[in-house]
Image (tube, rainbow, N blue to C red; front, side, top):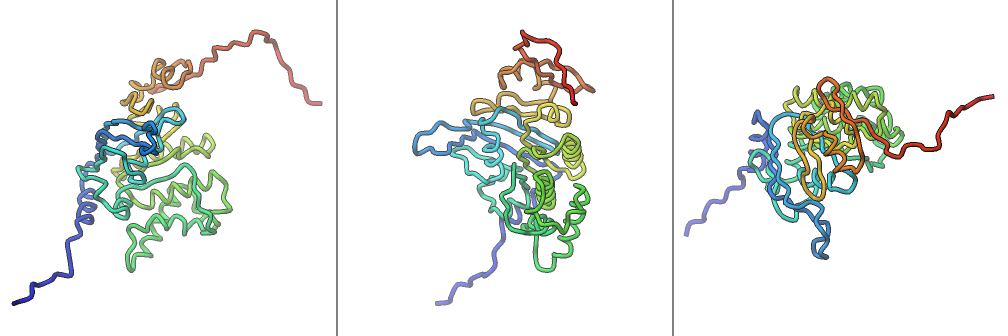
Length: 298
């Protein structure tokens, strides 16, 4: 009886999926009936329930909403850091559940709210970690070149030899952003990327993210608590509330006085700034016993 031949090679299906997604001129994320519960076995209420979303094309999308509504949970489900309790997430018609994490890391970059990195790596080595999904034998020089270009882009080339553990919170945030961009992803998820930055760099980073979405044909999805910066630079805005999507659309359609009061329980006035909505807080508790206050320095 003749032995059947055995092939020691096989087609890498996931690699072909990555190639297909990477070469497609249009990037799309499709969320179908996504539900997530942190402890479903104990009957906890879902953080997200039956969420449906379709984002298509290179753009900057901001996710807004009060604390505890599931903003971070939502992006963690979309980038495969969490497995949905039910429902699915697809990228260009491919289920992310079928894509191994290393391949997923080629497609999606992620910049967390804060870094827990405690190893005394240099800034260059820290950013170089973002090249790991793409690295192969003999690629180090090319990877280092991409790291250098990314540092120049963010404006932290002077920190190249500094230890990550010695940096300020704002400097660390820029390094983590550089690491995410060094992955050269088609989709970049960011959890409050400007939280530790002063107003100048908040504007610069958000403006740069919008520009990069165009230049690199990249979908950028960021969580933000700064409504005005999100409204100024985002192509579309998504507001989460009560486990689902409360509103989604262009900033001028989503950032309204009625929506902000409903979502955040505060009154605001919305004015237009270069055709973009800008909110002004309204303090309903007027100072009854007021007067002129003076401060003197002897």
